[in-house]
Amino acid sequence: MSVALTDLLQRLVTLEGESAVRRVVARYMDLCDVPHAPVAVAELAALFTEDAIWEGIGAQYVEKFGRQQGRDAVAAFVAAYLPPSPHFAVNLHFLTSEAIQVDGDSARGQWIMQQISTYEDGRSELISARLNLDFRCVDGQWLIAHFRTQRLFNSPLGEVRP
Image 1 (tube, rainbow, N blue to C red):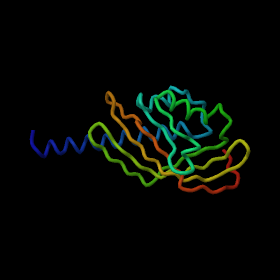
Image 2 (image 1 turned 45 degrees about the vertical axis):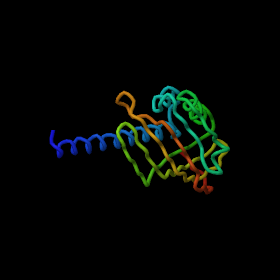
Image 3 (image 1 turned 180 degrees about the vertical axis):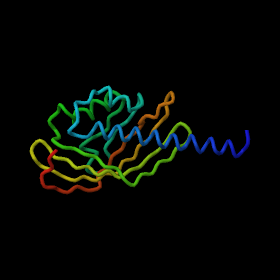
Image 4 (image 1 turned 135 degrees about the horizontal axis):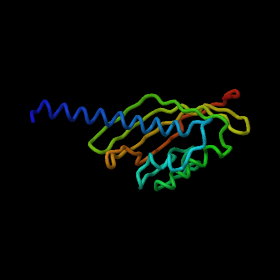
């Protein structure tokens, strides 16, 4: 195989990895949006590796979210915030400032997330957080291996309705 063809194939693998990582993150955000039909914990679990870690970092999120480890623990933790739990009346996620690096069967991504939330008690806020995620390709499927979220700021909003 020529050097040019090898280089082209590597570039294709990298682009496919980036695209797959985007789809995993988009699916995660979609499942976390409210209103949404109740999410089966198995749907969330399917996005993570067996040994996945989900954690809050930084002063505001270390104590609030802590560190969850293992696919089932991570999925149960995230699902506890979603319907049928009454935590959110509205919860929408928007991602920006994407940076993804693929290296073989692993990848790292960073995003700035804007989250608009209205809670069951009627309070609404805009939250901005930095997300740093590590991914692994397991049996041809890209999965989240380590999810880190760090709050950058928040601001109260007027009521947000669906």
